[in-house]
Image (tube, rainbow, N blue to C red; front, side, top):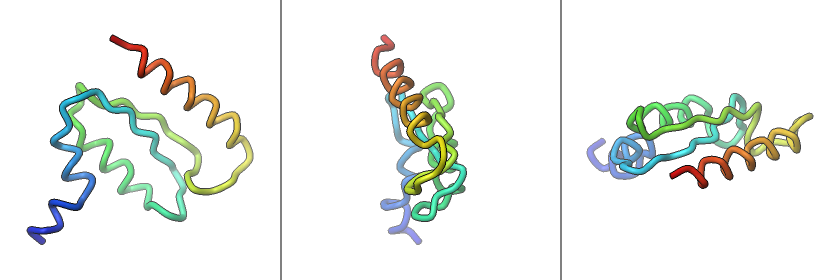
Length: 81
């Protein structure tokens, strides 16, 4: 269990000191959604931003539009001072 702390993304996320945008999915066959949201929640509140996707690693209706919205959000995020 001691070693797991070095590999767990939610543990590592607590140490972030830069603004971070997380795109987490409500459904994902490859990465469990609770783990995705745990990573977001572990980032210090003043540094985190969340973009919620309907699904990840999966084709679904509206995926292209949602990806476009995420791309715009990333652009806004990266252009902030």
